[in-house]
Length: 356
Ligand SMILES: Nc1ncnc2c1ncn2[C@@H]1O[C@H](COP(=O)(O)OP(=O)(O)OP(=O)(O)O)[C@@H](O)[C@H]1O
Image (cartoon, rainbow, N blue to C red; front, side, top):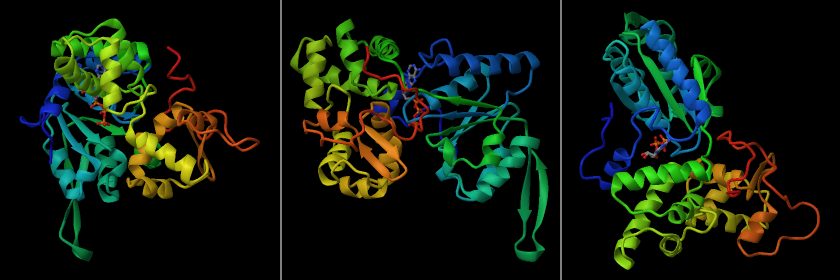
């Protein structure tokens, strides 16, 4: 049930992704607020010689939550055991995991909002008192035997902090809200990755890729690898602005960084549903995707980019979305001029991503 810290050999893309991970807070680019706050939490714990408070990291996929969980382990000099909410099917599985932790270990639970309810309840006592109740027997004769476990630090990651129950959220001593990265920080991520991969990346090439990376380091690194392929096959291997533009055109990544699925969502919203409002499930069916993929992968960025708004009545395309897709926005009232709906679940500020 525990995942390995290093991914399986043979899975090239994941091996590269792991190789590109920052290993210390000093190496971790961007997220100045979370990094500074977390640095303090870890330093305080180290000085006291005690495991730090439990940490919840929240934000859209690919912003560095797993990287930070691994960094917490390496900064503390302890092992990190990895699992995920959906992988914990029975509370007994979680009890076994918790009782196998060595003193001070970090337990990383990705997608913690998807943990089953009985396992979540077991986690409460483990987080607070470092104890679990092991239930022996079934039915009316069942008894709960309390079992001490070693002090540990739970690091939970979630793309949907709002779905966490109050009691679980309250047991985290530190909550880090990850923000989308600025283009300047993404350029630094790209420069670092290029030097680790031995790719010649020019400043304007990095700027071009950064501007199309949806504020997300994982996407920046993925685009860099695709552009590198293009540079090696169709050019002299150097990643310049021209090479990046040509490669990303080939891979259907537009100048705002929208990919095929983002555009399909916007196109369905604008063309099939006249700009909305429409429910997320209907929208997901229209593009042949799972509602949670549309909600957790596409929407945070589309909202942040001011292309889609979440309103109490459903999803609505903004005027910018109509224009971006090459359609004329309907005239008159009712067309939103910016992402004026519900705030981005990633918690990103209202600063536009495309101002650099
Ligand atoms: N601050 C950063 N500096 C440099 N590289 C980063 C940073 N954050 C993330 N990355 C890169 O982005 C990749 C994705 O990061 P990570 O897996 O930690 O994200 P995540 O938020 O856990 O995503 P998910 O929730 O989808 O698992 C990493 O392999 C790493 O190469």
